[in-house]
Image (cartoon, rainbow, N blue to C red; front, side):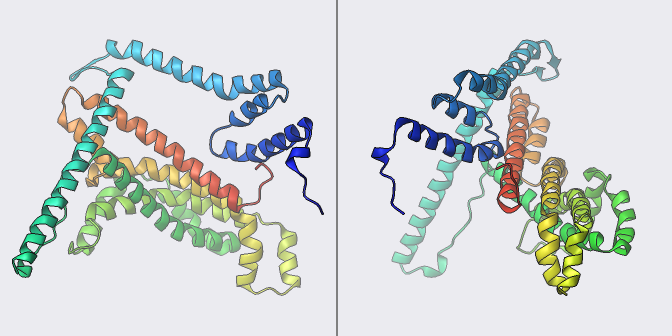
Amino acid sequence: MTAIDPGQLTRDDRRARRLARISKAEGWFRVLGLPFMAPLLRALAGDDPRGQLKILWRTLFVPILSILCFLALWATLAPRVQTSLGSVPGPAQVWQQARALNADAVREGEKRAAFYVRQDARNAALLADGKADQVAFRTYTGRPTFYSQIWTSIKTVFAGFLIGTLIAVPLGIAAGLSPTVNAAINPLVQIFKPVSPLAWLPIVTMVVSALATGDGGLPRSFIISAITVTLCSLWPTLINTSLGVASIDRDLVNVGRVLKLSPLTKLRRLVLPSALPLIFTGLRLSLGVGWMVLIAAEMLAQNPGLGKFVWDEFQNGSSDSLARIMVAVLTIGIIGFLLDRMMFAIQQMITFSDKR
């Protein structure tokens, strides 16, 4: 088979190849939340520009207009609402505080770097004077920045989500394969699924305080927040896993019996591939629930994440507090969207789908 020289391709051939690549990438544009990219690229390639503009109007311009209308209403109505801290901040004030938080993070980073430079210089001088026994390495204990609090929240929600997944998926598989196990688990699911994180938190706090020694390891506030996320977020994964396993095609089960597959082989080759779409649907729901629960858990457990940031600003009561809280609210929403897109992308890579 001879390779085709790109220089010998006609203009129509090159256009057809570009459109084929666009069609191949269209599914991933949807996964990433960028459905307007495919019609935009097709319009630029000359493929029915008028039809592509109609799609662009729906997928790009309508959302942009919606956001602009929301910002206009926000800017118009916010000054009319008076609180004990003054009027509700509009988009301009929120953007100003977002820049201030970024500047604070930059300054704190400079202080951190200067601290370690001084520490290294001090230790080097002690070593030069033969006082190696006085050399000490200390961790910088400055106040957390907005970015470090975001990272703390992300680590906490993934810790709780991972623990919940390790519990929910095996239980869901057992419940889906065995009607007896399902009958045993179902009442517990129905009882504990609606429980609020605010109800779980005192119980988790007391149990963790009784069992954790506090000598090194993870902070108690991190453990409390992660376990609270686990207790509130594992139910969608458990339910969807059970449903996915229970709804497996009976013909596949009969094939497994005919081939005399071992239980482990049947689980790995038949059950899990068929149940993966519903399992990932449950995982996406669980991660979204966990992210919402985390903010409330961090407020009360005082885990230094976004929840504690919101609580501290509420308690601070300064004129900038409301704007900073709104920055946190928008950040929470954007991160939640990105987490969902991430799980959806993993689902599309692992499960079988004809929509990519």
